[in-house]
Length: 483
Ligand code: GLN
Image 1: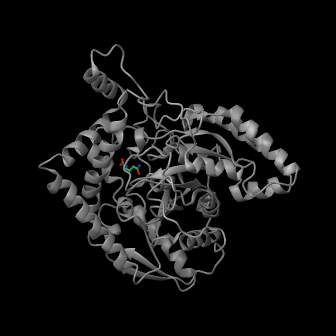
Image 2: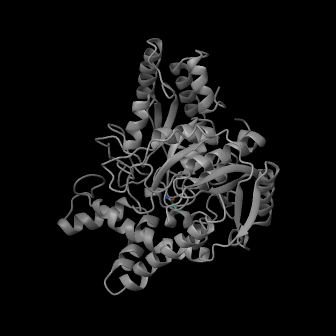
Image 3: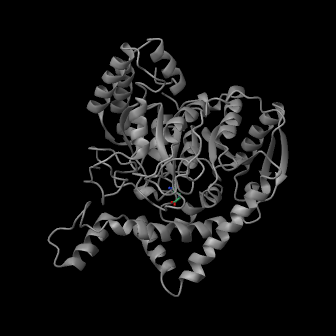
């Protein structure tokens, strides 16, 4: 039952193969049994989930069900959930019960979905391995001595371990695509502005975007149908006509042109990974696609620019965590300054503190022009590279990560090595473009992701291309041993 996709569960519920209560109980039992090892959930809301499932079954009995009624799923712990702990993976918010739902969460509630709980993540979504979580590292279900990727590692591991059929996630520099790749599941980062950020705890506001992680592109399309919505509560939400992302999944992709950026097949990429990605691309040639080498000449500037912009924005966003209004507060503060200082020193982990310091420095008078303004200029150059490339191609493809999942602890003492994990994912966030990771091979028994980069607002075509690949291959159907 747990290997079923969201699309299959929707059909089964409609055909009364099982009830929402039954499938919800099944996943809750799996979480109870398996998550001691994986640690992919921070909070499991079993009682709520069963109540929601019961309500869904009642609606169905009355003939009032829609596609999502009664389907279990989970939310990354970055999304505020009314009455439920919303920790963002941090000690700072380890006592924060959100007083309202994020728009993404209320969209799923309105659609009738059942929330199993909140998934583990790197603290405030800063990380590429899920090791910075206050609630402990998440394990990769393919090899529990390895990382699941980050920051949405809990969501990706939970889907790969079949503890939930789908989970929400967020991507600031790769946090949907990288863990999806390392865990062998499918993830989609939408165009900036498609999914409301309201109630999604801010890391770097101009880069953050919520999106789905699930087994297949079809499931991601179903989740995106719920997640994408214009929201007046988010000033960067863009008003566009509502789209059904499942409608064009079966279109033929013959004749499409795929661009392969030469900079993405550099020496940074493990040769076995390059071979797997090229083999995946040749599948598309069999389907009648044309392949063209392209250049994104400013790719090498993406990581340095990102590690100025993201820390700068996070240093501003995290200033609201001051121990006064909510979150962790130190014991017996001497005065206000002591309250601020100790609450923040105790509440934030090392990586978050590092980013706040880097960001505050980059924004300070005297350094602002040299770092922040410069990074913003680079950002425009990177965007221009993509705009030029999309004049000649329908989609861009490449690797998601330079290598398969690394060992827990392998990169923790070397922040630069950790930052380089995002070398192929970050440019897209700087440009605001949509991207996906699709399971596309194995290296040393570990999953490899193929990255798809679409043009602005081109999620439907990107999902169509990913779905056609999944009809022709079965990488997405492979599951870790024992699942
Ligand atoms: N690994 C990147 C970082 O630590 C990206 C994280 C993310 O996308 N949230 O900033």
